Amino acid sequence: MAESSTRTVERALVLLGAVCDAGSLTLADAAREAELSASTALRLLRTLEGTGFVRRDALGAYRPGLRVVQLGAQALGHESLVSLAEPALDRLVEQTGESAYLSVPSHDGEGVYLAMREGTHSVRHASWVGRSIPLGGTAVGAVLTGGPPADGFVVVRDGVETDVTAIAAPVSPGGRAVAALSVVVPSYRITAAEARRFGMLVAHEAASLLTPPAPDACAVVLDPQGEPA
Amino acid sequence: MAESSTRTVERALVLLGAVCDAGSLTLADAAREAELSASTALRLLRTLEGTGFVRRDALGAYRPGLRVVQLGAQALGHESLVSLAEPALDRLVEQTGESAYLSVPSHDGEGVYLAMREGTHSVRHASWVGRSIPLGGTAVGAVLTGGPPADGFVVVRDGVETDVTAIAAPVSPGGRAVAALSVVVPSYRITAAEARRFGMLVAHEAASLLTPPAPDACAVVLDPQGEPA
DNA sequence: AAGGACGTTTCAATAAGTGAAAACTACGGT
DNA sequence: ACCGTAGTTTTCACTTATTGAAACGTCCTT
Image (cartoon, rainbow over all chains, first blue to last red; front, side, top):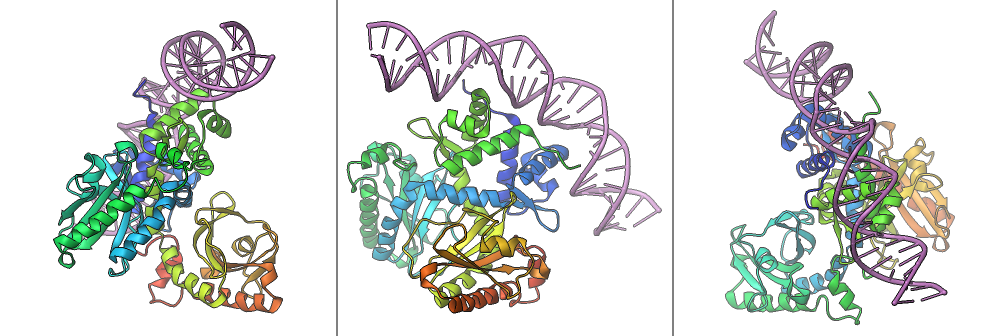
């Protein structure tokens, strides 16, 4: 088994990823990014264009197409994890006043934010949903990759971004972490004691995320990404 | 030129679309859906799986992967049209109490909801963002495909869904409709007079969507989907 | 005017994808 | 317990569909 994959499709997907990452890419840039010859990139991008996955703007540059938005939104809707987590995020914001996040490990050794709630303190900023997060040196990464933390949560002060403290707890049905709940606080605003308090809140929400409802929750535990259907 | 497209990639994308539409598909179903032989579908789905675009759940069924969510969210973030429209949607909800939508024509002769705001009346329901909307027999379709409506807006009572009235206005810089703003109201709740009032509100928001800001708006007009960069 | 970068098209070589069939598993009915 | 049906996966010979170099036209920059 193992190495079955169709080169063409892989290349097209790399191209698609590049365009989405950049927001806007010229053909030559896209080709370089994906390490393809211009002609191949052109052909592939044309296919992506024909199916609505990318579009060309007035200047001829490639941009993410509607299909991407559409599928992404649909997928988000189907992902029961985020709907399950939303109440928890709301409660965390309410209790801490800080922004709260749901993230899951991605396929490429990073993490992805699946949902967030703005804290009451922070200024409104562009959505982090869909953003990648490194797993090294972050609180989220620690709970996602490492075993269950001693206290049930992890605090990382001045991790990736300096001046912010992240407090994360794993959602780990059956011991394996499948997601992380976290709150992020400007470091100056939080004391060690408060960090512990927040940590317990986060840990509690994370722990109860997949347990409180009916026995059906077992199904959810076994398949945390899907709808119990 | 014209018909250049790579069959493999197209097929893979159809497969991806099918999985996302269904939320969960077994291999056999996916193959049927895409009209592919099981072996081909398997190979392509494996490729999609390897790149994170789909994933298999505990039961072996295929589901949309994180990559889809990630790219979709990124794309939505890059779409300046939605950020431009958000204040307008907010105002429409505020003024009408009903749900307000932003939609654009899709590549396949339908429309797609890009953004929405819940009305104050309605119960909370799953997001419509990413949903397709037929262009025939809908208010949105009328303003998206037809010329500019006489009054600046279109009212369709009991269109696709019975019992709901849709009121839409085109965002048409330079005469060509590139998007539609709309509000949707339960028919029983709205009188003809009020529909006209709402229509004028929607038309006004739609008309001023791309005009009020600085002269830079011209750039936006030429490239309504992208960020002015 | 020359030089360079980009987008696009063409075309022959062949690498790459295809689907039928077989192997294997898992159910469900009788 | 048995057989039949449906799903998943692997294998393999066929050949089609993908590939990239090269060439062309265009538009900037120097």
